[in-house]
Length: 258
Image (cartoon, rainbow, N blue to C red):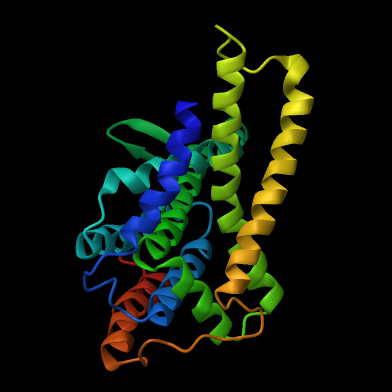
């Protein structure tokens, strides 16, 4: 129950951060979207042993968090969710690739360890770039910008509905879990015998709630074909902000510092 509540509150916390009024929040959504995509592409293009060349890219998340006044702990909790997947993927390299790559203070560091460190750093940078985009841009503005960039409507719609449906599903799961615990006495966990009916009931309740949400969206003017106009045009300051991120990222990719 606490985990469900914390997950739902986490979604709301990310949306509340996007309603800020800092210099980053006031940038055009297209500029922030382009910066995030370019940063992720540059980060992913490095080789598996390029940890030292990838380390300077830490300037982006820390600079963005400072300018957008975003608490580091809120984003770090969400980054840690992706940690086990990358950790398991990189541990095999530690076992297989044992050749010494470098020595630090007399301790040998193998290529496998270097590869693991690079994978973890890549994961951190890419996930932080996506989270910073979501934490500084309201979801409605982000999807509207994707439509203005002529991203295929089915892709944007699936992305939009999936994001909204996660919150709906968590709310239904929390209410069903509360009802189950109230009717099961001292039982704290879901009984294995009830998992099938519980999952089926959750699916039906989620579908019903999603249909009502979609009907409410249509009543308020939601349309798959309508492209909402931008609140303001792409200003020179937006281009300057994009250049301040993309130019150093490209320079660090083409010309290594060491």
